[in-house]
Amino acid sequence: METEMIGLYKTQKGDGFLELRTAKIPKPVANEVLVEIKAAGICGTDIHIMHDQFPYWPPVILGHEYSGVIVETGKEVENYKVNDRVIGEPHTRACGKCALCRSGNIQLCSQKRSPGWGIDGAFAKYLTVPEHLLHKIPDSMTFEEAALIEPTANAVQDVLERGQVVANDTVVVIGPGPIGLLSIGAAKAGGAGKVIAIGTSVDEAFRLPVALEMGADNILLADKQDAVSEVMRLTDDRGADLVVEASGSMQGIQSAVKMVKRLGRISQIGLTGKGNIDFPWDAAAWKVCTIIFNLSTAFSCWNRSIGLVASKKIDVSKLISHKYPLSEWKKAFEVVEKAEGLKVLLIP
Ligand SMILES: [Zn+2]
Ligand SMILES: [Zn+2]
Image (cartoon, rainbow, N blue to C red):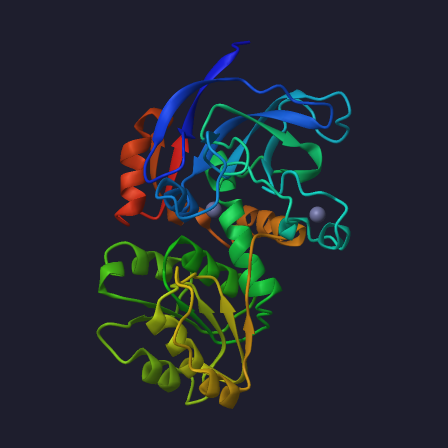
């Protein structure tokens, strides 16, 4: 077997500083497996790291949304073997001792260092992953689809597990980026009745047509119509049971409060990038609504997402717009940054 590979590194702090470099192929320790990466998705987080807007420890190989096949196992690995097709949760180096870890919430451990920013990630041919973070994927699932389980797990957690969709709920999804689109699929898979997707005219070309394919019943353009009164009209003036805020925009956040029904739920996905925002506190009190904040992905939503994607209840293949070899990473990052595509995959 070869001993070196090419990885896409963030080489130092600052804006930019991405380059392909040669790296040693990592060696799995006793409780780890070596995964040959078959597909890895570019995420908004990767763009933030490129621009120095997210914590990271350089020099580090980027990439945290991946799938692959096991090519080597450490001597303590029990439940996985060579040739198993796998994905992995990114909760590496969670301590296992703190209150969050011991209560099953390793994804929120302060010691966690995920592949792709805390330790070397998946924009390379090989990655070592601890056995306890692995999930097998069914033979029917392509590696490309499996690379989308991580973002799907976010949507499933934020919409179904924490957002608590129940049968026939009306769900509004604000912001049709990849996670917003997966949220539409998750809401439908969870039994939502009507799903209303809200974007703007710039989303008309690629994103809103996919919103319909993911199961949206209605599409609204927030810059061309009064989205709040349209939601009220579509819900017979009741408001939505759940509003998923996946835009991070001020207009989106403020309108979420106006669209949600009394005693309804707002589930946060988007971030504003600001320290403080102008929020309609009293209006939210008047709505008696629950606002749910979300971060990372718990174990339960990975299993749930694998099943939903395998059964095509969430058809992630509709989101895969581009595939590039690792050598063409620049073009791939450009497509993501200019929002010219949806999910862009690198094939190392
Ligand atoms: Zn991501
Ligand atoms: Zn911990």
